[in-house]
Amino acid sequence: MNLREVRNEAPLTSFLFSKASGMLVPLSGTFELSPVCNFSCRMCYVRKTAAEVKASARPQMTMAQWLRIAQEARKQGMLYLLLTGGEPFLWPDFWPLYEQLCRMGFLISINTNGSLIDEAAIERLKKNPPVRVNITLYGASDETYEALCRAKGAFAKVDRAIAGLKQAGVQVKLNCSLTPHNAHDLAAMVRYAEERGLILETNTYMFPPVRRDPDSVGQNDRFTPQEAVRCNLERYRLQYGEDVYLKFLKDVQRGAVPPPGLDESCIDPLDGKVRCRAGKASFWITWDGWMTPCGMMPEPKLDLANRPFAEAWRELTQCSARLVLSGTCVQCPNQSLCHSCAAMAMAETGTTEGMPVYLCRMVEALREEADRRLKDDQDVCGE
Ligand code: SF4
Ligand code: SF4
Image (cartoon, rainbow, N blue to C red; front, side):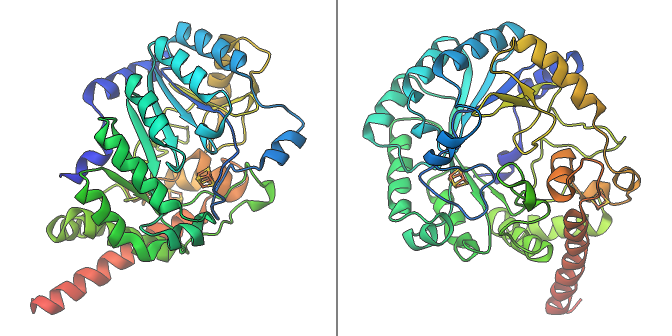
């Protein structure tokens, strides 16, 4: 399998998004149905317990509210819909809502940890197939899942779900969040995906969980920037093979590649403005009814629980257009190697205008590692 497909979007989709961004049409939405999860991953940006949700100042959105928003968003142009959590299958009205949303004609994807997808769920998904089920793979053994997700026997359940979904013809993609707690399983996870013919998208950059804990700006249970880069280069080598990997390192030396492991749909801040789709063609709605440009950003946020979608979307596009990025990033000669964005700047520094030093260190480490490994390669080859 050519793993470069991992990040390539269908040309029609890219075309639709570029049109939608220009016209400020909300083509893509994310419904974060619930922050509750049966896992408790160490680096999670959203998870809450059921008791925390109950004690929250704002209630969870109801099925009627989600359906009202879906209807209004469809009138404004929403076509792509991602259902996420927490763990979306834990949201009590997941199935009736999902089946209604399917009938409304959206192209639906589901983000899940996969552990709750049993035979009954597979049957229902088979009847109303989503465009894709994105399963986050956290390791290649029950032990690794226990270390990172603090969930027992989880890998076996996820493995069964993946096999069942594949057998039922439901499209599956694997996402992997690499951290110090599961990095030792990297080669096994790459092999797992390859043996099953599945795309595996791997990230080593973990956002500080500022939505869950406002005091966590710039911090998470994650790699140092240098470790994040080393791990990412290793997964690049494993997934793409030695030749492509060496070419990639040479491109890094020339300063002419996007960095691996960050979201490719987020584009460099060339002019100090947010250039990704957030707040131009896409939006995120939190479990308690706030509309934001991106799920990683606590601000700007607009109360959608009791407000027409069209009005909130208009205001969101205006707020998003006003977001400004760090002047240092705008002038930075490393932009073609760095994917810092407004959400990262906010999570790393507390404001979109701050300079996300963690990202700067990743770029420095990427250059250093490329130099070092190419030199080692030359020494071995006797060049
Ligand atoms: S599975 Fe996802 S939502 Fe659940 S705790 Fe882990 S990272 Fe958070
Ligand atoms: S985060 Fe650092 S390396 Fe990246 S663009 Fe900003 S200043 Fe440059």
